[in-house]
Image 1 (cartoon, helix red, strand yellow):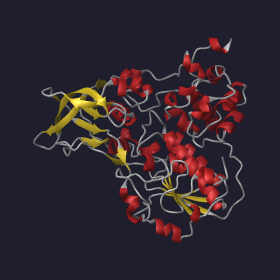
Image 2: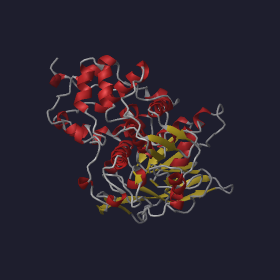
Image 3: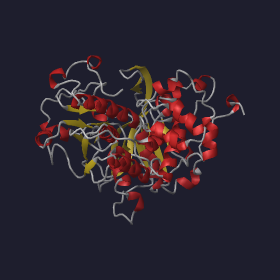
Length: 481
């Protein structure tokens, strides 16, 4: 069949009425024959714009061509020249706004399902056996990576392949960062994350858990211990609130707390794991990003009868992935657009019993480029709710900065870092991911980790010195493209 006649292949998924009662993965993945059929749609462009849309620059046409020709081992080998975590990216990356947004086929129809093919080839490798890449001879240099999230894991994996000795320091008792505590099992299974972490560790990377840098250890301690470079990838785990009356009532959660207890502490498997989360019949989630969708869909699975997304802008401004919004709607999540909470009220025992909201209208664009929501006077109304989950975004945790002299921060608490090299204002300290950009996507954090690893490698191999620290990247030859 000519490729132009092949329609984009749908991803099999659990039935909505079944999945709202379990935490098993919703999207089931392509069978091999469907993956190969989808791969046939790729035009193999001579100048593939899809690669331009990938923050880690995966050779997309090459891995798809190998898949199409039945060379699955070759396909994953091509993939891993750029991406250390393909099974994760294939599940949670917003391909529709990145690689797939630039696919030529998307101009007149549906783009190639690049993310779904990435997931297929990564899952195939996990089932058949993971092959380690070539690793450069040891350089004798040591690098400390702070944080075992997507930025840290990517940087650590690349640095190990370059021949450096890498140790990751993680504050929690399990590695993975937001991948393990922030994204629900039904969207990103924990065994997938563990397999990707194990791959990075298999490259010779050491892992130290339950270690809060800035508390257990300081940056000065690490340098005194003989590390030649430090990469900060601690993310943005400090939740934001609205600062409205009633946010201290019992039954009000930050999305961070809620999802951490559900995911990392396995509250969804109570009483097998003694970490329950109290969920009432009616739950309101404030915000409309991916985290809000995750929180709402988790609350539904924990027994809530009615779950509402409360968002101050309209449907057109929803920042969550279209797929996640679609799945939420299929599962019965209600959306209350152009609505903003102004107060949470409770009963005499200190528990939430309702939330007062106000209707909004869209005004002129604000600094984000989106229409600014403006309250409509006299439009207040009450919602009866038993729980409120605030999913309003996050900021970097200041703990890591307790000893970080010389590292400048913005007024938002993020690190001032070069977006290309990852260099901070302190020599021999790099940073990348949400700690620099604020809350963003997994793949953008991975891209930052990858760029910083290349610059660290260049520094450790003598391409530039501390005296050149603030030089522009184009003036410093990188050891790796």
